[in-house]
Image: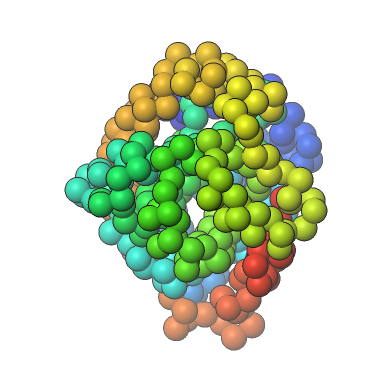
Length: 316
């Protein structure tokens, strides 16, 4: 489902992606049926046949793809997705993109995917702040909006292999950083539990000297394999050494015919267009009172992604 906000990889690129994971469209469709049948047999998980709580087949397909076509890993990830929403309702409930606080957040602080994918099929997303003013900055709103964006991509709009993040620190102040520090680990844990994240690269731009310790600290806990994927740039121009200029917005030194502000406006419209779908998502959760004793314990969900200070964050 291609929209003006997200251009999908070409059919030939998608075919190459599937081939890499030893699958095809036909095999993926069959595996989705197998996974839906598995969900029907899990008393604690949402029933994929419940018309009032529609389970998007696209979500299952994307999770399977991100799990490298492993049915068992996909089962764990689906279980995690529907369970973590119970643990952090401040981020996974009241998903109304027309609410004043979320409309305000996307204008001030947001996480937005860029429309054009890379030639490998990766999706580039930007963490962006439009102003240094923190009077209306609410960390929970910013986080909620980020999760809504990733969820819509996964379940409805996008097909991609790995994520590339651009973290624009241009308008970041200590008043942004201070309230975020206590929830960094919780945010990372929740992100990797809820979504099939596979990181390719992280690019930090417009960094101020006072922010350097806040970049260096988490890097010091990461495996070298992960730290080598994080690039701190002296100028926006350096982005073009890693990301094709045709993908980057005009004010990021690129040739994509829109500014980052225009792309954010388009994405805000996309979120509102899916308001009804968003409003149902909070109720599509696991019921742990029905969880079988031999089921994966939700407290162990993060062991393969993060431990302590991000020590097992997976990047491949």
